[in-house]
Image 1 (cartoon, helix red, strand yellow):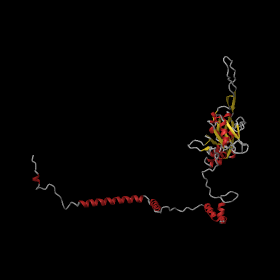
Image 2: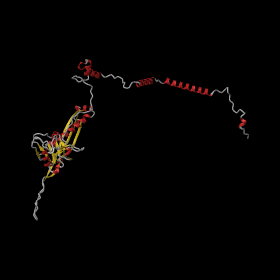
Image 3: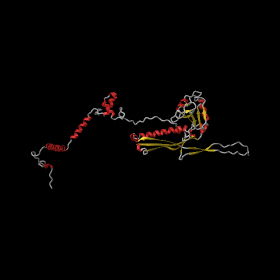
Image 4: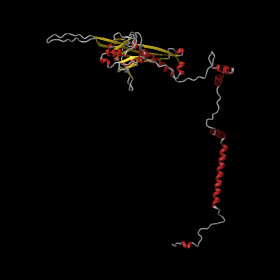
Length: 383
């Protein structure tokens, strides 16, 4: 086999070009790009002919115009006829044109007048309801029957000193019983169904809150002044509680000290002063012989203020200082027993007054109270 050397091929013509027949490569590429561009433009033109883009163009123009507006610029909104009339009336009063006044009267009631555009706030304006917080310091129990009876020892044994071989004396232990009976506190409220619907639940919640405040105030007053008939027995109406009689028309520091130490030590160390705000304001000005105030403020969060070192609770239902009143109670309030048979129960009855388009809301509470240990208290009676 003969192998041709590269040196032998140098003089020969292995590849030949025809200069006259071949075109320039640059011209070929340029011509190809021009043909491609022409083809693309023709296709886009055909698509635009088939699709209507005029609406899209209009929308884009509007968005562009809105974006170019200055910040804070707003389109003018034409006010309603009633609002324009109301604005004119505010400026001119009864001198406004009849046409404007007529527009206001069209939406008014049958008696005429001017009606401003309504706006109802979600804020409810209500007065605070104060009631005596006897429950917070008294002894509270829950029962599951119509009443509860507490055995009570009413006396002591009769032990005596005797000589050797002398016969021991006999003693008897007297016992008794105290019964605490819950009593019923009840009421109902009729409310329009339209009000219930239009208030979005606010009316019913306000009724429930008003009932709770009313019941709290009524039972707080009964725990102080209740007769014990069809209501709890009150501390101030109990005849067995010892009474300290004041000597004048004002409360003196010496009388408070004497009244405090009349209470046995075992009860005095757990006792609380109870009075209303007016009486408390008068006592805050009292000083002892060394010029120190009997009343002392609370120096720690959660701790009550004190009088002669014992806490004081403000009870707004108690008497003011005056002739023949009982403005102060001092004692261990564990000696007053509160029994709960039924917490405040609220029943909504939409059927009873359905023909009147109203709903009746019932509320019932069963609670009792009684002084079970009168020796734990002292009452201050004004002269």
